[in-house]
Length: 315
Image (cartoon, rainbow, N blue to C red):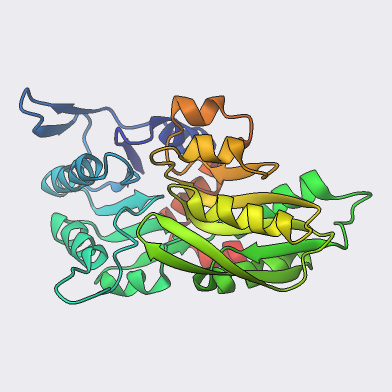
């Protein structure tokens, strides 16, 4: 097994390597003066099972090109199998035509990864499950729910029992399946925020479906970008009489003034995985807590390498 770390999230790559008990493969990934990317693998990878760890987060185009070039490098170096480990899949929100003359960029990126030479993809909480069908190679889409549930039990249980007033909240209708699955795991009730998005990057809370008065509410989502949706939802829940509001989100994009919005919101805490490298602003926030997913990804990597079941991780 060979682990190759891109520049997108070095701490996560180190965590995966440490959990596997192997070292990262020596590689040189650098840029020329005009910002062209050059990749050189400094170890023999002929016949090896290679895993390229590279979330395609900001700057998404640079990190995507770095991933593609690294895959091509390994293919030309005769690696036996190449798995693209993409904890955060950039462009995933462009998974369908939203109007005339608009692209389906998630499919385009899938084509690029496949044509570059990847044999399979390992990712985490895809924005839309159908993106797996955009690939003509196997895709393992891991779920972070068990990690979140473990954290909820560790932090909220009293004498081994979770509060009776625990409510899982979906911040929009599209996330209902995710929230329902989480509610089932923690034996909590379910609520849904009915919102109307007037334009990209802005959301308006319209209604709350479900009883939240006096409840400890946990918002569950896959991506926090500008944080407008989460913060508006937190305000609406508190206005509706919620006892407290926290949030669990898989991918922390945190663009623009997102961190400032979260710090000023009524949310007690926002727990987010380290699928995307934390910025100094995120690390300095008193409300944002990082939850490591290195152990989960490491277990999936070793199972793929040993041709064992990955889905049984979530059984």
